[in-house]
Amino acid sequence: MGAGMNVAELRAKIRDIKDFPTEGILFKDITTLLKDGPAFRAVVDMLAERYAKERVDVVVGIESRGFIFAGAVAHQLGAGFVPVRKLGKLPGKTIEVEYELEYGRDALAVHEDAVKPGQRVLAVDDLLATGGTMAATLRLVQQLGGKVVGVAFMIELAFLKGREKLKDYPLHSLIVYE
Image (cartoon, rainbow, N blue to C red; front, side):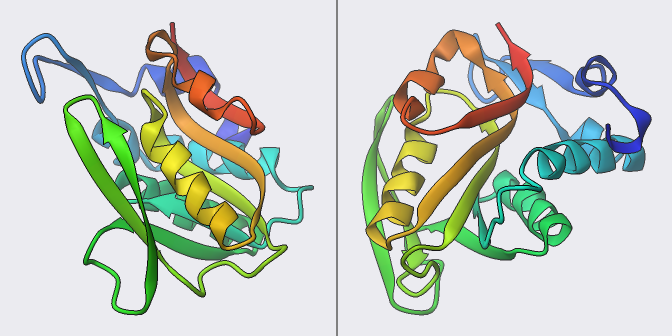
């Protein structure tokens, strides 16, 4: 296990912020974990170890906190890194997908040459809530012909049932809040 830390020790490094970004929300602030070198290393090591035998070609990370983990996991696995971004942020030709939010719609984009057909893809984000953003990301990967070999999160808010939207994929979360 990465850097000798366990999941309970990692969970203890995540700070709860009440009423952020709106009233009634208990926000899981990961900045307190990220600034702790051994804890950050442990998260990256644990996520990477799980996929070490999957022959991952590229790790897809979702803007913006997903970049933090996806880039580091890609490095550990010797894989490439592909950013999935909000519309208008990527300079080359892109493909886009729209998806539902609780309060409207949003869209994500990826470069049309980011994933080659048949490439083995690991998708990584910091947190699984409703699953909408990751489901949209996986649609982009599939449009490009990528084979999703895993979907990984540092945190899963299980009570929001995001896992149900992603049931067709092998999913792993390090820290689960019931």
